[in-house]
Length: 503
Image (cartoon, rainbow, N blue to C red; front, side, top):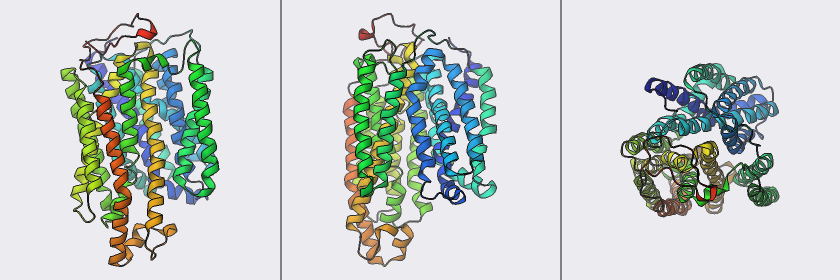
């Protein structure tokens, strides 16, 4: 159902606003976290403010994607926005950490829809060739949220209090909801189909176990070894049971038949590369810069800003180029190669280089990642039947989330273990801060800088290899063009689904 140009523009504005709200709550709360924990008297439990949101937004992705296919995208979209706004209100009214964590679970569930439904909607309403451009516009919500989220959170917390970090979502959400009421058309689902409850429960348990194991692993400490092992075992058994169920049900939550389609498998693998290769390390880069380059926290923030800015620019440019030409294979090849080079430069940098050097290197990582981050969503959607747009979009997003969460825990554990083992005797690992290092003697500062460089070098090398593997995977994409028009539902059997991305 093609939209008129003005209605498409109105739809893009609405979806961009909604996507920004969902992305913003991943970043805006971090600045006010210490204030929240202090006022609620729960410093030791403050991580649950983040974990509860991340867990819910990850677990609900495949569920909402499948519901969109069955009951219609419009219904799931509006329900997600309303849930997000109501949960935001209750987050602001929370009187203790338990109430806040529960409200954050509901908010995360709504945020999953805010992030997923716009992409799914574009996959149904626009032609394959038009999708990269539109998805790139909506996709800028995430890098913008990374750039401005912490700043907005700090300003709101200082000026009005931490509760307004959540309440500010309400007027913005109402505006987006009003726009969407006019712009979002009715999109039929497949009514009468049974929802895969068993698959949803098993996948929810599996993803929860993975996220919790990763969170506990990143926290460190020998006392956390047992729950990590238990969670990992639950994840393995849950995945095996989930696959067994999906092979038997008539309407699976994640149609495994899509994994016989080379294009879809490559897009899923590239999405995992992004989660592992970039999002696992970007949170640790500021600390590395503060320690290895002896800068302030403010100055160290310039490096991730360069990364996100590169991602922002390349997302818009490559999305536009892909829609103009219809060709898409070159962008994952270019992006993985550039990101691998950037991470390789980071691994080879000696301590004491000018700050602009790591800024350029991490900028290359951002440029490379942004070059194909949204394009692979468009290509995967085009390679699947229209009736499975929600589930295939959710799968691409889910693997990136899981890859990021798991790899972040591994990277954090490696950094913590390496720094603790090599720290100079003059410093205590338990109280190590950039301020403590900067207050130490010049020789100790030099030792710490060398230590952080030594610890981060193999990590950057490993992530460069991850992108290099992504380059090899991208070679498997067909050298084809995206179709110029919306394709009808394929009539082929599931085992021989054709690739409608090829024109």
